[in-house]
Image (tube, rainbow, N blue to C red; front, side, top):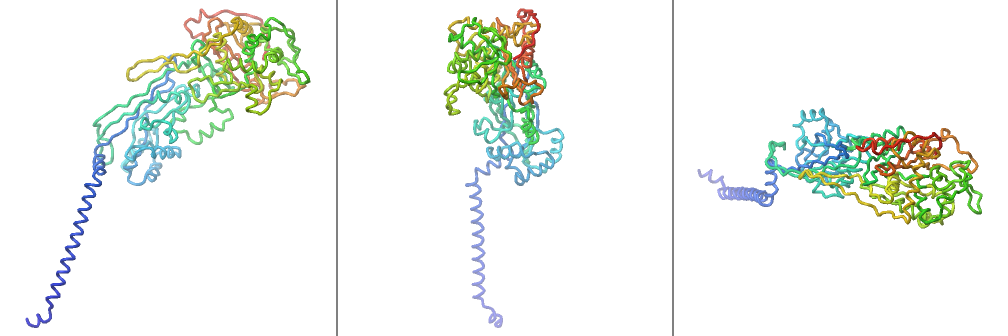
Length: 636
């Protein structure tokens, strides 16, 4: 024992034991402190966050997008419809790996284009991470089946049933009705973001764009119970969305098809208005396009094909096309000349086939090179004498030409309830000085009075202007909206047409002079449109043909045969008309790009549309009148 005691150092061992005990106690206290600190951090500082996460594991608030309002024509035919569809959504907060990786894996079983990805990332920036953002807007049945088989591999990804837009009239009304497309970041910058929560589409063109605020509606919400994978098990609460208003248009879809088909293989536009209300009966721009291609995001190949098409199917000729109106402006110029008293309508003027200005040997030619002899105002309109109107223009002057052209709406937007309308050009001294920094020359007055030179107009402007004549100065602002239906109250509210400021003439007989001359264009054997439009008339029609020059001819060159002129250099063919004359029901403007003669090409199209519409009216028999006359092949 004594030896063992001598070997052991009890004091050292006690010190070592004490040190180890204190070290272990301190370590234990540190660990307990860290645990307490973690508990405090989780229970106090992160209480709200984890409480929300806890609730999200069993309850989720979802946005319920509103049902978009439908679009009908005047007879109740659907122009824009909603069809069932399935869309694929990603909830970024619930994915197991990165969103980018999830999309890459999804692409192997579901077709996801670059456009889909761009739209997703744009919307994701504007959407909370706990809400779903669509990556594909319309899945096929086979894609739905493939995803369902692989659903367990994609937490945070789900398929939701919804609606997609469909356009039954397709290309026939594509420019007027327009289309919806996926919401982009730039779209959200212009709208109330709260109103578009959960929505995937927004109006992009036509009526869909101009009446977006009425068609869209307001979102609702619902609370659903979910499982651990985030899949909804049952609905706990519901605040329904408010559907958008359905709207009824003034458009006659049957007449729209007639007008589109009447253009045949030619590019152009047809605008038909009800002169009593300003309602658009038909508005065609040909060629059209398939608006369904844009709903779920048009492919790059399809969009490139449309952009590169030489016939420009995306170009709305009716609203945006600015063409020289040619001889269709002569009735409006005649009214200006009558009102200012610079001409006597009964006095005959000599037409040798050309005119020259003092001090110049340049010949401003008539469309009929051999001349038209002695003619008065009525004959000048019926036969579309350029020389008569050259002389009229010299007396009227550019200032009055501008004044009366502007009075009938040339150079101004009509204000129709459709987007992207162009104003055309009604030239004046001030316009030329401001745009060309040059003075006005007398020769420019001559070509302006026959609708050439700087002057341009849209087909809609021409239809509106001829409506003014049809109603003798009392017309209405053109519009496409007829009524709207409230989905909550099921009430229909009619749109009230807006009367335009009346054109009050000093002498109302001037209306009759011009209208009778336009009547002669069609039913007088010497009228330019008699042969092509005036045969076997069922309704009395007042009209005016026009040919807008695309390329000029040298002074002494004879006008070549139409077939020998390259298509791109041929004149545009135009025709304006209204019928019946005494109680107008329709006013129309037709433009055929590079069509040639206004009477021979555009005139029959107008006649076909007029007859189709008037035949469809309940009182068509009382409007009819029989015409007969000798055939006389003339054109302008």
